[in-house]
Length: 502
Image (cartoon, rainbow, N blue to C red; front, side, top):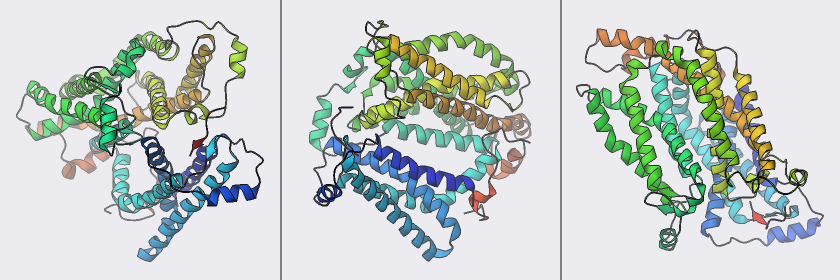
């Protein structure tokens, strides 16, 4: 049994306990009072805000069901054994949510809820079903990703697109009634170009739209790859023209999904940014001959140096420019003493959509640190970097520490200690994303020989070239080594705030 699967199973359980029992400020009520209150609970009305919390609870318990089913199903065989594992994990989710909801009676900022219990239990069950329904294809995809080459790169891009769309719609609080539709239409959460709710962002709005362009580039690369294979006779310019319609459609689809969610903000400017990102990604793929690793490595370090100062200025604007760079007029020490250092405290104190948006924004801000360190290490020789991962983590951590400390001296801003840990994780993610992309791009060396031997045919035919591309790399770039135990030997062919529910 893979030790990583066991670790993730226990971590998912500990994460659930942490998220549901924070801030751990237990009162002194009696057990009898708690039991009387707990047994008198009833289902509240499913309002829009309650449904948002309910969906968030489902998503929170889904990893618990997934990883515990992945762990325990490795010790059983047959339908009956897997059924018993599924029932045990479902009961574990039910017992966990019942325990934490009961303990929330002693927490001053928590309120037990049967609605939350139902969401937690459903999330655990969906995690079990996800494992049994997707583990077979998932293991095959994982094995292909670990082999590297162009097949792995294509699958990685597909996974990125799916993850991007799902994260864009989090917390998936879709509207379910005409009243909610009418409320959305009358709200300031949408606009043909720019939503009124975001008018106070100023330059930050343009910066965030630029980030959207960069984040959608991989979609364009995947679309360009597909178009070149499907219509090989079309010129490069023709492929770009063909990509305009699906690029615009993708941007509109994501924004329409944002509009359909209660907490989402839909903007025509964001849709255009996504369409532009997709189009640029197609251009990047069509011109891939000019962006070979051999050519790019000579520009890696100059590009990092060229973008270093603009990146730091961008970080200052995003982190310290929210109130117009107004200096703090009060006591900085008093402001520091009011800061809560409990991880994710401030994420807990705001609505789920705001917390998720803040988390994703900080990840996007600090991922470039890991990317920059990887490119710096890769550039001179164009070979897989073996060192620098923890340097990327440390630099991202220190940069976030400087930015959060700077908020002490800016009026209207409050530092969040959790941001430094999110930044460290983002630095790690940026490095590993480059390593995974390089693991796939190493198959690019085969494109020239393939296209010369098969003129006019697509560059990749997975059935005929999968093993050749998988063998094109000799060393794994450092994401993690292949783990045969994961597939278990099976054939790869199968503070004064109002009380809150939670």
